[in-house]
Image (cartoon, rainbow, N blue to C red; front, side, top):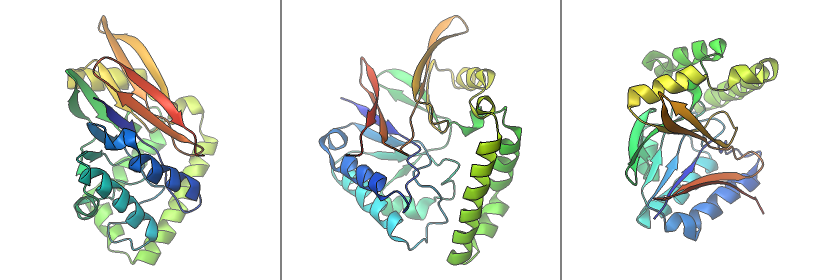
Length: 242
């Protein structure tokens, strides 16, 4: 018995070996024998809409459909790069969409699942942009644009993101400890799993005098990263691309 968690794959045509790794991993015995596969955001570098006719979304959908056909549910939580992914694509890829901040019980332990970007409250500039782009009006305006215009917009957004990352202190882009504690208190849990920061680690700490745990998923820029949760243990490990 095991549930698997991945995030921050940032799949993109510029790194085909990572897309290949994703496909191989989803076709492998670990995934096909799992109780569930969770993808906690930023599956792709940029999602421009469910009507994207590029090959990459089609490849992803084939891979996740095959996992679901094997009897393994595939849960997807949008991140900051793919929050425009909607019900049409989810149905095509046989993904079960999750709201950010949902609690799932994993083998008897309630666990808070997040992408993680809302926990980075010290990055005030990012949070302001996030609030703007998550409004229904902003989403509707973007999705009304022709595909080619959306591709150009996404390319500029990626360039702006790289510029922001390069000019912002790393500590500011990490999670805020009080934001983590607040989210866990509100959810009534002592375990949190999230991605976004690309800093894979298992953090043990005290939350209101109780043992607590925050697990951060790794990114897939150079290799894969998987969290395996079993009833009595968990393992966070890398996946070499070769």
